[in-house]
Image (cartoon, rainbow, N blue to C red; front, side):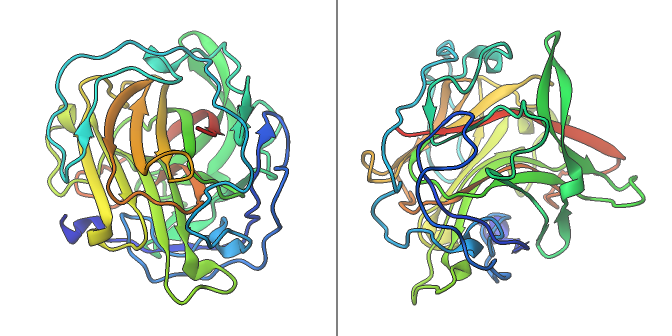
Length: 364
């Protein structure tokens, strides 16, 4: 893969807890694990736009350094609420670095991103948040205060609870704001949430409405870098799993095609291209920029819950999968938007918004 995927460094500014455990949805804290120590410092790594040190957990200590077990506690099967979603016929389209395309239905979500009237936290989850409280739950989340590539800021003031329309229904959401070049006070800023805890293999889902166009990266990813542990091991461990919209491509096609191109990436042990799988997948089933909510998901088999494998879904429909470069290390989940300086991005605006309806992680 071209080294153009490896452009960025991440400076994360605060430390977090790295305890994980099975929680019933609505609980404030996990049931096992230890608190974190001091926050990590900036790393000098460069993986797919978001390498570096972790304010959110790698900086926090207490993370398992073993490469075996993904979760400190078991339990908690995934909920089956939300419907399956129709199967999708049609081909996949080419991928940029391999990876299989898919057209079968599965899991939660359903067509059109599920229902706003369904309680997403019915069942047992490692983490579930429908953001229906009066404020963001800081026992579960750190509100991002980071510099990406040491100059693309994500700020806490750009994340807030609010309401938005979902097919005629007002839903409570996290409003993650993206500032463009016309925002004189603070141009090119984003907003995101980072889990306080690290999680291993499982089903990761977020119901989101993307930015209205290529006005920054609408992203869901996890990330771990051992450089941020209080006592880093002699051999560095770096892992990441991505959903990026639109995908980071060197020469973007027409927006009608690029809008449907989903970036699915994974790193297993280092941030090197040789240890990564990049899949730029032109979906035949979804346009994440259609102004509607969609459920974005990956199923991660990390060796403790089946042979190493990743599958990426949108609205319950399998989009792509791989068995290459699969991590077996717990990591934190990040969700939101940041001002990616990728080819084709457009920042000739003041303020645009992406919305997060809910996020959940379940055991597989």
